[in-house]
Amino acid sequence: MDAAERRLARVAAHLVPSFPVTHGTTPPIGPTPTAASSSSSSSSSPAGDSYRRVHGDVSSEPPEWRAATDESGKPFVDIIYEKAVGEGIAKITINRPDRRNAFRPLTVKELMRAFNDARDDSSIGVIILTGKGTKAFCSGGDQALRDSDGYVDFDSFGRLNVLDLQVQIRRLPKPVIAMVAGYAVGGGHVLHMVCDMTIAAGNAIFGQTGPKNPPFFVSLSHPPPLLQSVSQVGSFDAGYGSSIMSRLVGPKRAREMWFLSRFYTADEADKMGLVNTVVPLAELERETVKWCRQILRNSPMAIRVLKSALNAADDGYAGLQELGGNATLIFYGTEEAKEGKNAYMERRRPDFSKFPRKP
Ligand SMILES: CC(C)(COP(=O)(O)OP(=O)(O)OC[C@H]1O[C@@H](n2cnc3c(N)ncnc32)[C@H](O)[C@@H]1OP(=O)(O)O)[C@@H](O)C(=O)NCCC(=O)NCCSC(=O)CCC(=O)c1ccccc1C(=O)O
Image (cartoon, rainbow, N blue to C red):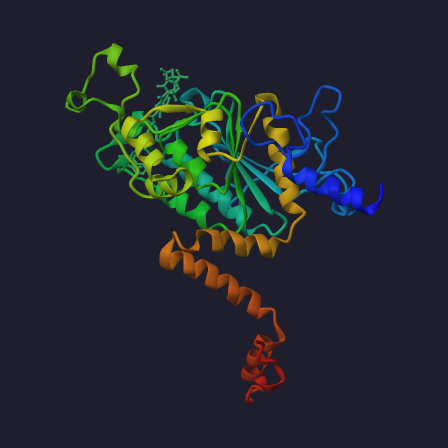
């Protein structure tokens, strides 16, 4: 192929999706695996381009997951925490499938411990958040434990500690990817929205449930069994659950999602911009791991700064602080910053004259 043909092929590859789309409107990274090609893979760049020649394909091989814990060494009860051997991927799984992975305060505390560990582990570059089984990613707060001051499990008082978890994910300087099979509803829907990206299985269902109950219902402390089976909880998330949603899907759609409290299929969610891609359920983890591996090829500092930059305007002072903190972090690595520190330690005036005042 001569240079002109190669350029034409490259342009064409940008215009037309290179791979068949089985679900949703966005192609997964690389060809949709078939029975014959399921172990092969590619990056998102056109076959034969220089990136591909230098870096090769992104592997589709399943990682070897190894159980992990945090520095306390305490075993987890409500979650499974794993790291991929020899790769920079951590996986955190909500493990309450019989409750459709609803979270209670303990679940949230354990999630925060695991996220904290993954943040502090410099071998980890990307974190997957998921739910056990194929029926649910997470169905929100465990309604059986809800009281007038939040959710009560082993303490005698209620908590809404999932809000702290949301902030933790948002500020965590590594990408967090929601891997969603089945229901992501209520507070579980908010959790996937605060993640940096969402890979959805074809069976995923998204939506808010909070406002769903008819008003006469709220006053009934013991609704009749038939009505109990209807999704009705009386809740709302006026924080990230509203603001981030509005950013993701636009203000009109966000109103629709909250005011009507409908459920949406994975393909509908894809069209609304709620998810990054939709893949067949059987391919969910393979595809998610591929996305992780592709991210891990890229510059960790660039990704760190970009995550804070993408959130900065929406997160106000907290967003600026995160972005600004990254500037300081990078500055500390420069000779200019070291000159300041060394001068202080050596009890001398710093000589900043040697550093260029760049245009
Ligand atoms: C998710 C469903 C649509 C799945 O339906 P289906 O597959 O038919 O399964 P079910 O038979 O309904 O469920 C199986 C089993 O699981 C139990 N279960 C499911 N979800 C929950 C839950 N959230 N809490 C407790 N238990 C749950 C269910 O009862 C069944 O148990 P059995 O013993 O087998 O009968 C469907 O299950 C469903 O609609 N679930 C409820 C979804 C929901 O409304 N979630 C709560 C939304 S509110 C929320 O999450 C608040 C979050 C929060 O903390 C917060 C944050 C910010 C501000 C405020 C708040 C706040 O709390 O107010």
